[in-house]
Image (cartoon, rainbow, N blue to C red; front, side):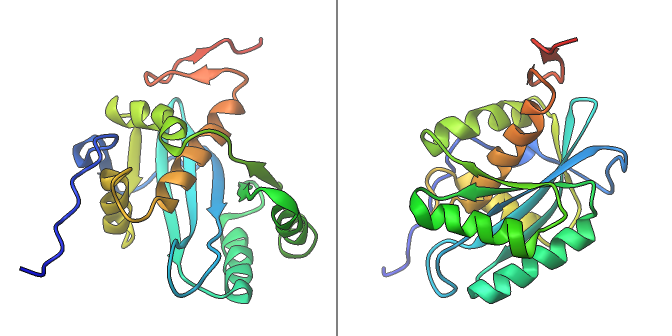
Length: 198
């Protein structure tokens, strides 16, 4: 009688939309999007998602998902950047106010110096920001590279926005935006580009 009910799936993402694949095209464009948590004990997790794009198909390549103190997070971000390689863009959600500015400045000058890094302020409701990547997933244009993190990824995204956490969805939708905006236009769920400059 004291059991906690299982939250219902949120409807924005379904498990069957994500095909799990063994590998991804190594020539794809990649971005690592980070969302830092304020606490290592409770609340949201620090999440860093690596997303690649090749010919209109997107690949969730890796997910770092931890609760750690600030020094531990800094070490993880740096180590992950070294593993991803210099060609991978790095973006981080910039929190409002001076603390967010200071955090981004610290990472730009100390932790990720020499990498293609910048902070990106988030605007608008999370559900609205997730709509483009939800449409791409429903169309079958987002694949997941097989890894130990797959279950955590699918558990959170399929519960969104009804689950207890949304940091994985935040980095997924942020990384999707980072890659689609770089094309100079908007990528449809079919993978075609609209309004790109020639």
